[in-house]
Image 1: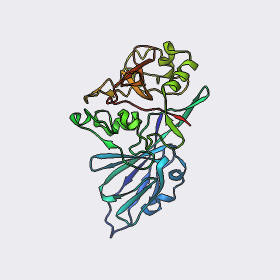
Image 2: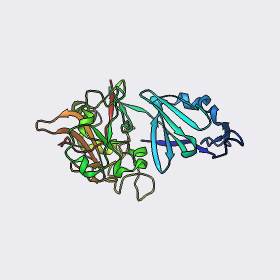
Image 3: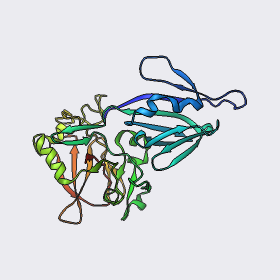
Image 4: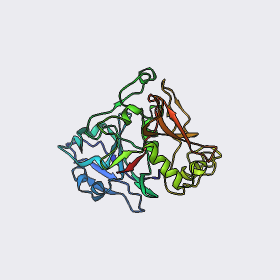
Length: 299
């Protein structure tokens, strides 16, 4: 995933009786910051025209992420409130409690590999396609034994979610309400196989799918050696780690794990693993209660 921070909003806590609150946008284009009256934000063109952008709201020591793909509009019912209208709900935020808002633009939303079109970032949704919420489960003991859909951030840290997306159990992947956005579906075992065969087979696929660079070198997210990494097709596979069936997180920096939508011949599910020290992609069946990332393929 290639991320670019495109704007930072600082909400100035000015007394309402003194003047209207002012918002400064810091755009990553070499220009000077521009100031807007707070009720004019919804008129800014980039808010309406960048569906590949996410908005991170820092509020009272918490971070909430809103995907622009689900954003209908942003408005201000009055000078105290920010209203975010999404395709599945509306959120009211009190301006005085907002520390800052960061817009993150995903520079690529999808990539063509052979005849398939893949998302080139991990899924990061907290609602099913019909608008129903997916349960966030942080506690280790609560994760264990779940038979309904759930998600979490690695180490329950939203900052990890901004980079790696969410971790899901398979019950979320398989829910009939639909985990993938409209026009997409969770990749099946056959679709993973089709893709890896196209790029040269399992023995080299891990290297060709991994993002480049290393943590030690300061230019990537994988630990040394990040063996064979070329990101040749723009898939940008990241080492987001996973969650074991009984709850603990593991292997961020060392491995990326992705669900398939196909059950194995046991009671498990066929998954794909990328590791830091090999070029081979592994196909293994894993427990439905594990926590892995999700990639989608266009319908």
